[in-house]
Structures are given as C-alpha cells and as structure tokens.
Amino acid sequence: AVRPDRAAYRITADLSAAKVKTRGKDGKEKEQKATGPLYLKPGDKLTVPVTVAWHAKGKRPAALAIQPERTQQNLQQEPLRVNNTQIAANKNDGPVTIEVRPNAPPGTYCVVLRAETQAPFARDPEQKDKTTNLAAAAYTQPIMVTVLPTAK
Image (tube, rainbow, N blue to C red; front, side, top):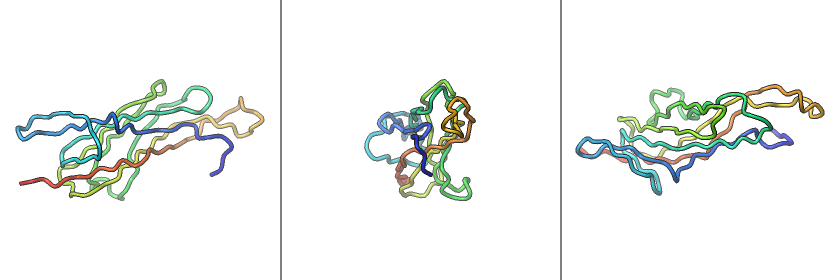
C-alpha cells in the first residue's frame, strides 16, 4: 500500500539486551546475557526486550498485542514457542520469551514478531480531527536462532 504518512508505529527487538535462561548439568537454572549469534539447546528460553516507537498523532488508543508470525500451519509442531505478550497503551516496551521446545530438531530457525493494535486514521485528509481507529500491524526484523543438538 502507498500512503502519504509513515506507519502509525514501529516495533524493534533489542537483541543486545536479550537474556538466555538455561539449565546447567546440575539441573539449576542460570540466566546469562545473549551475545553474538544465538545458539540455544532444547529447553532454553530467550527473553528479548521489544520497544514500540509510536509515530501517530496522539496517544495509542489500545494495548499492543505481540505474537509470532506463523511459519507452519500447526503451531503445536513448531520447534520454537513464543509467548503472546501485551504492551499496555501507556507503555513503550515489554519482554517477549522465545522457548525452544524439548523435542526441537537441531537447525537454524527464524522468528518474526508481529504487533497489532488500533491506530487513528483520517478518512478525509481535510478533516484530520475526525478519525477512526483501524487495525494496524508492524513486524520486527527476523530473529535467527540456532538450536544445537543435545548430547546423550
């Protein structure tokens, strides 16, 4: 679509502030900062901060729902599970957790997050004070995750 103004908002995933929660050989969970390429084992959890930059005039009228963009028809078979997150209308950031399923086959996977909310839209450019709230979506850059094989 072509529009005269830029999108109502933009979302970004901050991988430099991401954290990985993993279990050690002793069974205890430990959390560490994610650095460089993301290498995870089955059962690991990656927490990524997501930031919203609101470009539309005025306040955001509704909460922002963040969910994964589907890569398969059956979500139960996807190797990575992404929790559905809501960012309140008065906030501009929130964490999203990506969990590697215990039975995930080794390989490199791509996760794209989709955000949806209501955004004000003026049907007539001459009457900017008369707006209607419409559904608006935005996407993050892909997050590449490499799942390592488990040693037995």
